[in-house]
Length: 615
Ligand code: ADP
Ligand code: MG
Image (tube, rainbow, N blue to C red):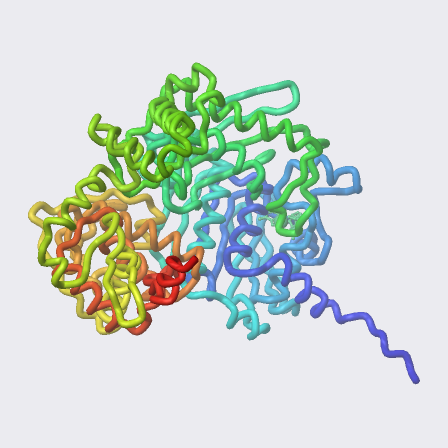
């Protein structure tokens, strides 16, 4: 048998390597901007069309390249940035593997124009899927312009794998945020489909944050600075009452390189412990400077992962400095957890002894901790004498009477509940009642049906909104007072992207200057009077769902609308309302689970009930 092993042709090898470096249009944007930064540019323009699927272009005013370098730059492992293996550990530039241009040009149609500052004439170079098409002289400005068209035109499987435009645009936006934060001294402009999304002047970090995320961030930033002999940490964190429902706005940079590290994120978040409700995420942009010899950035080709030789001391540095920053600025959460019934109290996890005195001064939960420990003492004192539940109920009632609803699960309405049931004679006849202001209970043939009111309502609304969106026939109720809403540029572009759908569902709004809208009307199904909060809630959930479920924008919008307009736990329902929920629920296509996958109802079978009473 003859020899069968052959070396892969260069173009295929490049295509395979491209799989690692180029996952989607956002990776192209990232690599090109990084090259521009490395080339010393002071102005960078990013232009994308169709969320980068048809075009990603980056124009810089950096050093540019000579004719030979221009050609060389597309070769694999061609880099001007490291010469020997030791350099790998002393990396100051963003790129260093010399893979990006070779990979991108293997899977797209690339055109490069570049000129050195002292040269009269520049170079134009064209490559299609690793195929060199030609090189010419061209007159152009100093710097480099890279145009990447029709990504994956020659790899249909990967092209089909790309997500919808809003999803791909979101990824580009994420990369843009990271790069623009890492280099606030560089001016950035960003166009999507000829619309200018960002125009950022060179500025300080705080101004860059405001430029990227919106004016309302101005009052929310707390500086965080710490320096030891080995490491320095600086940046900004968000105040505790400025938390978001999605994890998006958390940034760590090590030697100016954006990194993902659950470990370090944990360090920050744990510094907020007790100050923010569960399931919410603080804002932060933190830069760690460390001697490159203590890190290894060559762990992953996309270079967002990093290894430290002493992770633990970095963890504790981060945690203490964030705590200190929160403490120094004497930040008390404006959210009043004591009265907000929708937030589940999570303070039981925290013991008073864990807190230093200074911490206690700025923690609102001082009282909570004490109350919870009181509860424990009570339990111990009476353990065995009464059933624990009774004691707990007693304590809760007492707390409620003192006007302190802390120990209650869903606000002080709870102790009125029993009363309501007893006095509502109708409910007896109807065989239906509300339990714990959260569940609807009704006997059915096979047992006792318990319905989670919140999940049920979310399901009902989800299907309603989906129908409305599909038929594009949402009706709107006029707001008494139109409300202006300032958005950050990326939320604003999301609104524009979804404009048709948002209007379709029943929001009436107008564009109002730069990144702002005026809300005139909200969907008729919603029973609130603030357009702003519901709009923001829907957008926040949309972003969160988008990351979690990655489904179509219609479904996502319907889901976000449903979670924001449905009946919540803790809301008292009339018999009529309960009956209507049951009727509507069982008219749904899928009455079993909420759009977020939560079980909606459970039937406590007669047999199970009978079993309880058998010895
Ligand atoms: P790396 O950035 O890892 O070195 P790339 O494939 O991204 O690898 O780029 C290869 C080389 O091309 C770079 O090392 C640099 O010398 C040159 N280059 C790429 N983009 C630019 C640019 N915008 N301006 C100047 N030089 C560039
Ligand atoms: Mg590079």
